[in-house]
Image 1 (tube, rainbow, N blue to C red):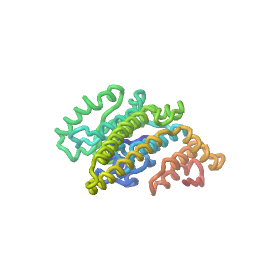
Image 2: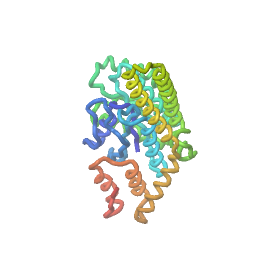
Image 3: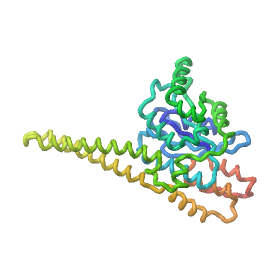
Length: 326
């Protein structure tokens, strides 16, 4: 398996579709989030059978970071628990971005903490959208990425490549990872091997700290609104009504944030183990390990419409009459 990550609009789903040779996951025409959930796509690269996991970005326009991290953590824990080989992660960044935005920094920091220093040699840092920019400008931005933002990862074994937008380029990228040794990510070790709660992991702590800062900001805003409301004279009825609306809006934000903090207090490793055991018990006895593991992972991660027949074809020779259902 290979995982594809990056900010919204970087071209994650487009890369997956180029690998598949057709549109199997939805692509976004704009920079709004298109991939709302992780999806598992089967790909044939020469004689290799590869599963590519498309992921939502941490700057998702619809979902909070805590929810996205919880989902990615669960899927990666399932892959590790099932013994499916992870060859590496492709991290995509738009070369058209003229600066490293706050959302890019946040996404990249969470990403580094998911991977961990020991697994950085299995990371491929990919720049996309080269057709939208002057080559000289793109080369200068690429140099800045190498020298500044990506220097730590490159120094720990990560490689950098360009995605030129076609299938040949996509295949060339993932082929660099297919020859790598299998890797275990820091988040997987923390959740599965060490049994940590999600908010006790490096990635979870980073997201939780960000929520705590927002929580303090919302609490200060609420306190300010409360003081203003008490200072207003009785005749300021219209202003009081507006303040009440603002107070209710800030209160709702605070409640949602507190719910996000609670969602990070999950024993993801234990949850995944129980789910896998339940699914194993429903599989027919005597099913070979590889098809069983792939079947369970596909059921946990989810697959886009129209790819079931690819999985079926993979195992047709291994098990005559094999019924691959989700």
